[in-house]
Amino acid sequence: MKKTPISSEVVNEVIDAFGVHPAGKATIRELVKIVNDIEGITGQEYIRMEMGVPGLDPTFVGVEAEMIALRQGVASKYPNIEGIKPLKEEAARFVKLFMDVEVEPMHCVPTVGSMMGGMASFMVVNRSDHKRTGTLFLDPGFPVQKQQCLVLGHQFGSFDLYDFRGEKLRGKMEEEIEKGQYSSILYSNPNNPSWICLNEDELKIIGEISIKHDITVIEDLAYFGMDFRKDLSQPGLPPYQPSVAKYTDNYILLISSSKAFSYAGQRIGMMVISPGLYDRKYPDLKRYYSSEKFGHAMIYGALYSLSAGSSHTGQYALAAIFKAVNNGTYNYIKEVREYGKKAVIMKAMFQKYGFRIVYDMDMDEPIADGFYFTLSYPGFDGFQLVEELLYYGISAISLDITGSSRTEGLRACVSQVRREQFVVLEERLKLFRKNHPIPE
Ligand SMILES: Cc1ncc(COP(=O)(O)O)c(C=O)c1O
Image (cartoon, rainbow, N blue to C red; front, side, top):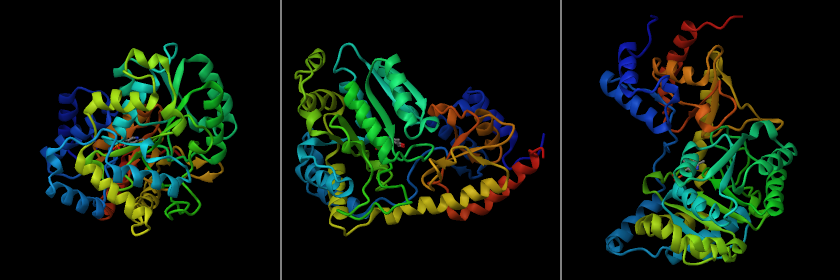
């Protein structure tokens, strides 16, 4: 056995006790547990890249607003499921100022994170037509969303977007839609994990397909504004966060506070339902909900049965954050840009020691530097690579579990890695390379 930075006995023992072989097959939260256990036994810190936890302080205005609301006694009151008025108003303003899309406050509804936004969307969209019960995922993607479809008993299909960029997207989507019975299409933009960013032409294609086949697009904006190649941070000024909302009236936007505002812990996000969809009547919804109206079924059917609304204080926090960014008194992008800067350094370091960037191009440009990047190493598949890196004190997830066709790769998240850990990262990568020579 070659000497590794973390005791191989401990790593083997923890992986065996966990029972997932190879460990690269583990889900994100399972890997978190494996790494926590190894760290607990060895006392050695990992370079943690497995989970997309924000690595920055929560947005200050949110915390302040939340504390004020708490002191005013909101904790004892059930929040309105539709959301508190200031949040709904600021959310509609945010959508106008940062996306150039018109919606009314009534179309903006808080959810317990975008996680719940996704679940509720599936519960209503995929039940709006008894002949169709599925979601087409433009992968790679966030694995839990497929888990949500599974637990709901919904069908899903997917393909790897990377192979069908630009005009090719149309043909591939048409082909998949022919095969499946889909009510919804879901993708994240920027994309977790590849960090490709769909452009206006592609969003237009998705919008046109949504109209042609009457399919609702669930646009997951978990990384809102975080294509750092452009400055998307100026309220009311172009460029705006690109969105399918420009090209179809059959959409739901999921705006998460977790990454853009470092507010993951409070589990608060926003679902924005297009005005046309909100008012639309689907008789088949009556099978599950009291109303055939989409917006009503979403709020008083799905969101009511899931949690009867989102926490009162979280709503006050998000209202204050939106207000500050809308008024231009707080530039959230300035803070999260740090992820892109760390990605530049980390990607270069991995490449220096023989790793390759898997999703390396975004159309004809190099992939942007953001919250995630993807890696492979000659001679390993993604599952093996995740497991092998555990012996070197580095944790990540395999691309395979994200629906990627690039099964040789893994996803690395920059957020939790601190700059002062770069020295240790480099030492570990150097040793990895030494122990795994690449044939010339
Ligand atoms: C693509 C994507 N969608 C949704 C989420 C969940 O967001 P939230 O924390 O708002 O539930 C994440 C979190 O990592 C994500 O990456």
